[in-house]
Image 1: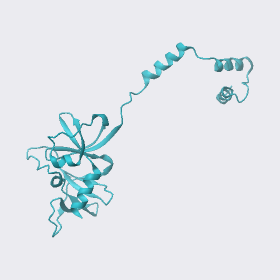
Image 2: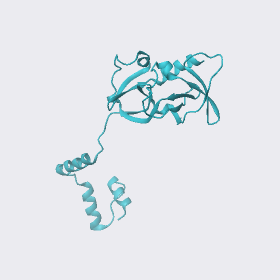
Image 3: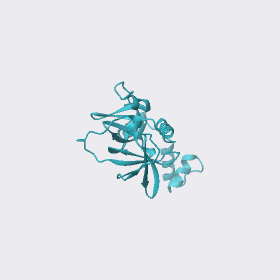
Image 4: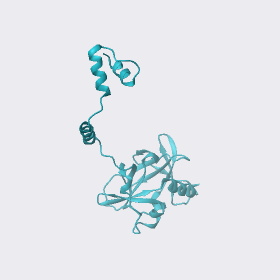
Length: 202
Protein backbone atom coordinates (compact mmCIF):
# COMPACT_ATOMS: atom_id res chain seq x y z
CA UNK A 1 0.00 0.00 0.00
CA UNK A 2 1.38 3.42 -0.95
CA UNK A 3 1.59 6.51 1.25
CA UNK A 4 -1.06 8.18 -0.93
CA UNK A 5 -3.44 5.26 -0.29
CA UNK A 6 -3.04 5.75 3.47
CA UNK A 7 -3.62 9.53 3.18
CA UNK A 8 -6.74 8.91 1.03
CA UNK A 9 -8.06 6.42 3.54
CA UNK A 10 -7.46 8.83 6.41
CA UNK A 11 -9.37 11.54 4.55
CA UNK A 12 -12.24 9.20 3.74
CA UNK A 13 -11.73 9.61 0.00
CA UNK A 14 -11.94 5.89 -0.77
CA UNK A 15 -11.79 2.56 1.08
CA UNK A 16 -8.36 1.26 1.96
CA UNK A 17 -7.36 -1.55 -0.38
CA UNK A 18 -5.32 -4.58 0.54
CA UNK A 19 -7.57 -7.09 2.39
CA UNK A 20 -6.54 -7.84 5.96
CA UNK A 21 -3.63 -5.40 5.79
CA UNK A 22 -6.00 -2.66 4.64
CA UNK A 23 -8.40 -3.40 7.46
CA UNK A 24 -5.57 -3.19 9.99
CA UNK A 25 -4.49 0.18 8.64
CA UNK A 26 -8.07 1.43 8.72
CA UNK A 27 -8.49 0.32 12.33
CA UNK A 28 -5.20 2.01 13.24
CA UNK A 29 -6.29 5.31 11.67
CA UNK A 30 -9.70 5.19 13.33
CA UNK A 31 -8.37 4.33 16.81
CA UNK A 32 -8.47 7.19 19.32
CA UNK A 33 -5.01 7.56 20.94
CA UNK A 34 -4.86 6.71 24.62
CA UNK A 35 -4.41 9.64 27.01
CA UNK A 36 -1.04 8.23 28.10
CA UNK A 37 0.15 8.26 24.48
CA UNK A 38 -0.89 11.89 24.05
CA UNK A 39 0.86 12.93 27.26
CA UNK A 40 4.04 11.10 26.23
CA UNK A 41 3.98 12.68 22.75
CA UNK A 42 3.50 16.17 24.21
CA UNK A 43 6.43 15.61 26.57
CA UNK A 44 8.67 14.56 23.67
CA UNK A 45 7.71 17.66 21.70
CA UNK A 46 8.34 19.93 24.69
CA UNK A 47 11.74 18.38 25.32
CA UNK A 48 12.85 18.96 21.74
CA UNK A 49 11.36 22.43 21.31
CA UNK A 50 13.56 25.49 21.07
CA UNK A 51 12.88 27.89 23.97
CA UNK A 52 10.96 30.94 22.77
CA UNK A 53 12.02 34.42 23.81
CA UNK A 54 10.40 37.76 23.35
CA UNK A 55 10.83 39.77 20.18
CA UNK A 56 14.43 40.44 19.27
CA UNK A 57 15.99 43.46 17.59
CA UNK A 58 19.36 44.19 16.03
CA UNK A 59 21.56 47.23 16.56
CA UNK A 60 24.78 48.35 14.93
CA UNK A 61 27.02 49.20 17.88
CA UNK A 62 29.78 51.80 17.73
CA UNK A 63 31.63 54.20 20.00
CA UNK A 64 31.92 57.98 19.91
CA UNK A 65 34.25 59.30 22.57
CA UNK A 66 33.28 57.46 25.76
CA UNK A 67 29.73 56.70 24.60
CA UNK A 68 28.69 53.35 23.14
CA UNK A 69 25.73 53.87 20.83
CA UNK A 70 23.48 51.76 18.64
CA UNK A 71 21.56 52.37 15.43
CA UNK A 72 19.16 50.03 13.65
CA UNK A 73 21.35 47.58 11.74
CA UNK A 74 19.23 47.94 8.60
CA UNK A 75 20.28 51.60 8.34
CA UNK A 76 24.00 50.77 8.02
CA UNK A 77 25.17 50.16 4.48
CA UNK A 78 28.87 49.46 5.02
CA UNK A 79 31.90 50.08 7.23
CA UNK A 80 35.13 51.27 5.61
CA UNK A 81 38.59 52.43 6.57
CA UNK A 82 38.96 56.16 7.09
CA UNK A 83 39.68 58.32 4.07
CA UNK A 84 40.27 62.02 3.45
CA UNK A 85 37.33 64.34 4.07
CA UNK A 86 37.11 67.36 1.77
CA UNK A 87 35.74 70.37 3.57
CA UNK A 88 33.14 72.53 1.90
CA UNK A 89 33.91 76.24 1.63
CA UNK A 90 31.57 78.68 3.37
CA UNK A 91 29.94 75.90 5.44
CA UNK A 92 30.67 76.45 9.13
CA UNK A 93 28.22 74.05 10.82
CA UNK A 94 30.18 71.75 13.10
CA UNK A 95 27.85 68.85 12.28
CA UNK A 96 29.03 68.87 8.66
CA UNK A 97 32.51 67.43 8.12
CA UNK A 98 32.48 67.70 4.32
CA UNK A 99 32.49 65.23 1.45
CA UNK A 100 34.13 61.82 1.33
CA UNK A 101 34.74 59.50 -1.59
CA UNK A 102 32.83 56.24 -1.14
CA UNK A 103 33.42 53.88 -4.05
CA UNK A 104 33.75 56.74 -6.51
CA UNK A 105 30.75 58.70 -5.24
CA UNK A 106 30.98 61.87 -3.17
CA UNK A 107 29.08 61.29 0.05
CA UNK A 108 28.19 63.80 2.75
CA UNK A 109 30.20 63.12 5.90
CA UNK A 110 28.64 64.33 9.14
CA UNK A 111 30.14 64.78 12.61
CA UNK A 112 27.93 62.89 15.05
CA UNK A 113 30.01 63.98 18.07
CA UNK A 114 29.09 67.60 17.30
CA UNK A 115 25.39 66.73 17.20
CA UNK A 116 25.41 64.38 20.18
CA UNK A 117 28.08 66.28 22.13
CA UNK A 118 29.92 63.09 23.05
CA UNK A 119 33.32 64.75 23.28
CA UNK A 120 36.66 63.51 21.95
CA UNK A 121 37.91 59.97 22.41
CA UNK A 122 40.64 59.48 25.07
CA UNK A 123 44.07 59.24 23.48
CA UNK A 124 44.87 55.96 25.24
CA UNK A 125 41.62 54.26 24.18
CA UNK A 126 42.06 51.27 21.86
CA UNK A 127 40.04 50.38 18.80
CA UNK A 128 40.40 51.36 15.17
CA UNK A 129 38.46 54.32 13.85
CA UNK A 130 36.17 53.56 10.93
CA UNK A 131 33.95 55.30 8.40
CA UNK A 132 30.34 54.16 8.70
CA UNK A 133 28.08 54.67 5.68
CA UNK A 134 24.34 54.98 6.29
CA UNK A 135 21.64 54.18 3.73
CA UNK A 136 19.53 57.22 4.63
CA UNK A 137 16.26 57.76 2.72
CA UNK A 138 17.36 61.18 1.46
CA UNK A 139 20.74 59.88 0.30
CA UNK A 140 23.80 58.19 1.74
CA UNK A 141 25.48 59.74 4.76
CA UNK A 142 28.78 58.83 6.39
CA UNK A 143 30.28 59.45 9.81
CA UNK A 144 33.52 58.60 11.56
CA UNK A 145 33.29 56.26 14.54
CA UNK A 146 36.04 55.95 17.14
CA UNK A 147 35.42 52.20 17.36
CA UNK A 148 33.00 49.73 15.77
CA UNK A 149 31.67 46.57 17.36
CA UNK A 150 29.21 45.65 14.61
CA UNK A 151 25.76 44.08 14.69
CA UNK A 152 24.33 42.97 18.02
CA UNK A 153 21.04 41.09 18.51
CA UNK A 154 19.22 41.59 21.78
CA UNK A 155 15.80 40.89 23.33
CA UNK A 156 13.61 43.98 23.44
CA UNK A 157 12.77 43.15 27.03
CA UNK A 158 16.39 43.94 27.98
CA UNK A 159 16.07 47.61 26.98
CA UNK A 160 15.95 50.01 29.92
CA UNK A 161 14.76 53.60 30.23
CA UNK A 162 17.28 56.35 29.54
CA UNK A 163 18.78 57.37 32.91
CA UNK A 164 19.36 60.97 33.86
CA UNK A 165 23.13 60.37 33.86
CA UNK A 166 23.18 60.06 30.07
CA UNK A 167 24.41 63.21 28.33
CA UNK A 168 21.51 65.50 27.52
CA UNK A 169 22.23 65.67 23.80
CA UNK A 170 22.37 61.86 23.54
CA UNK A 171 19.22 61.48 25.64
CA UNK A 172 17.30 63.63 23.14
CA UNK A 173 17.84 60.99 20.47
CA UNK A 174 17.84 57.84 22.60
CA UNK A 175 14.92 55.42 22.80
CA UNK A 176 16.47 53.38 25.59
CA UNK A 177 19.62 51.94 27.09
CA UNK A 178 20.82 48.39 26.57
CA UNK A 179 23.07 46.78 29.23
CA UNK A 180 26.08 45.19 27.52
CA UNK A 181 28.44 43.50 29.94
CA UNK A 182 29.95 46.25 32.06
CA UNK A 183 28.94 48.84 29.51
CA UNK A 184 25.64 50.27 28.34
CA UNK A 185 24.57 51.15 24.82
CA UNK A 186 22.46 54.20 24.06
CA UNK A 187 19.96 53.08 21.40
CA UNK A 188 19.37 55.96 19.00
CA UNK A 189 16.14 56.82 17.22
CA UNK A 190 17.22 56.75 13.57
CA UNK A 191 14.36 58.95 12.34
CA UNK A 192 15.06 61.69 14.89
CA UNK A 193 18.78 61.54 14.24
CA UNK A 194 18.46 61.74 10.45
CA UNK A 195 15.92 64.55 10.69
CA UNK A 196 18.24 66.58 12.91
CA UNK A 197 21.18 65.97 10.60
CA UNK A 198 19.14 66.95 7.55
CA UNK A 199 18.21 70.25 9.18
CA UNK A 200 21.82 70.96 10.11
CA UNK A 201 23.35 70.23 6.71
CA UNK A 202 20.62 71.43 4.35
